[in-house]
Length: 371
Ligand SMILES: [Zn+2]
Ligand SMILES: [Zn+2]
Ligand SMILES: [Zn+2]
Image (cartoon, rainbow, N blue to C red):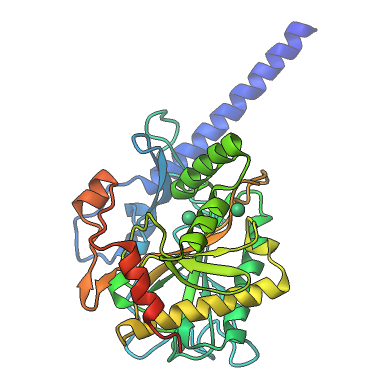
């Protein structure tokens, strides 16, 4: 009897294995044809067969991190002059009745239903499906504005949208991290002027967050306290790098700043994500955001380019009592019309060079009006 059951199980496993193998082979066959050198064939026409439609995560075993590969995104079309897909009445955007809006990204790098990966089963060159979510977060129906121009009430609506998207996507078990961010300015490569941010919800914890988690956990274990809380206390005490603060939040250029105007915003209470904030704190958050952004706009009397990222706890169901929610800015300018390049030393050795002092730059921002 035992032998019979074992034999049956073996045969079933064999069938299943053959089935999976055939499916995989079929999928690989469709995607794996070589790229065409014939420039006359438009990419869209050969998307799935020539690899342009390839979409997968590839593991970098040297840096121990996932790379998002999407053949299609590089070929996304340029929008017609004067057309804005985020203005009221455009394709998916309602004419009326909204202040803020989240939309699926039209050219996502990650998708809830991604194709099968092209490469599989190799222990060295691992790949996995690009399963995730990419959304566009529209800040206002007004086309001709930026986050800094909006009222505190409108910025608060943006904070509520961030919170709502974090909460909702965080519940999906295939999403381990909800990364909310904004790229602003042509210099960062933004082509759409309508004020908006984005989110990438990853099926993994991204490496920078992982590094922050590892180090803050070590500190927590060693001292029993939060690394971020200690940094914030020290910055407030020393005050030379504080740009502004209110009852619930503080903005400073850290002692160890990476970018000339790379300020951080911390909630004064130890919270791990937006969802932990109380109603009053969310309004304080909107207020300090507006103050910082106004200072940025006034600094050089120009539309100030930046990358802004929200660092919250992962959403993988585990507990992260040692993490502390915060916002980081990476503005690419070091002076008016002078760019800070993350060149060879930064990109190739991972070492940051700071050509001023954080105290100097914090002073400049402190002295800039926020009106
Ligand atoms: Zn618009
Ligand atoms: Zn803390
Ligand atoms: Zn951070």
